[in-house]
Length: 392
Ligand SMILES: Cc1ncc(COP(=O)(O)O)c(C=O)c1O
Image (tube, rainbow, N blue to C red):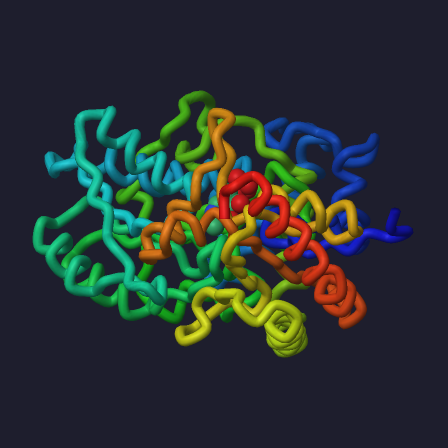
């Protein structure tokens, strides 16, 4: 049994950073626990923390404080942008059409599908084998004036970085709202809503060292969105409900750190990433590494291993002390190949043998070495098993 575990699954979630925990603790305990809508001193203290957090998140993203809507995470922010803009289009008498890329996170894909249930339409835009959006398909879709186009900045499975500015410019020229899910981009790419025209942008706290259950949507044009949950008038009526003050404060601090450290951290992570790829390839030469020829995330490496199943590999890696994730989703008991890899044209069998290594703030050279050391043993064990079971 390994004595220590190496965590290489930062795209799934990250540990809460000590600075972030310090910032949020007063808002959980007896000091500033008030409801930010209350007028007494307890409420005012909570409101002050909430509004400071709103300013911090806004500053980190190049937005105005009144453009920040706190949500319960990336999933809710994505739903608010996609479903909320479809509902706003309906109110304007326009068709409810949500246009999203084929490799979006399920939060966006399922939200677009919900628009169909509401009586609208979804348009799924294809990507090339490099994962980059097909611009001809985008132009065709824009000619139909969809309510919203949603294309993620950095893909969470393979790490492809989309040319978001070029996509946003086209949407702007077509007079159409643009949303980007920047959950995996924030803290790694220079994410700022001043650099291009985008109506909505999503971030999530737990990918940047804040706790789970807090996120934000930047809303640059409030007329372009309608609330998807209903209640009191908090957050300009766009996202009613008592705000998660401690979570917002945590997100504010984590966002500050993400911006302060981004350049140095990105340089460090991309070196670690390249080192990891070189070592894995030296150990198992026939692996396929996704998105090597296009712009890719500094911290995500997607590795497909012919003749080996990802679920078995990640369990053996875990036993060997290395935590990674599979490139396939386990839904309704059956392991399905990832929709992202299939959209990029990867054969089903190879897609089923895909692992995602994702690096983060606490990743070290020793972590990379350890992962690369145990990798070949795990691959040969799982390949042998597959042969015995006649699956290879
Ligand atoms: C790209 C992307 N979008 C959205 C989400 C959902 O965020 P949350 O877990 O905060 O709901 C994730 C989380 O895995 C993600 O990677």
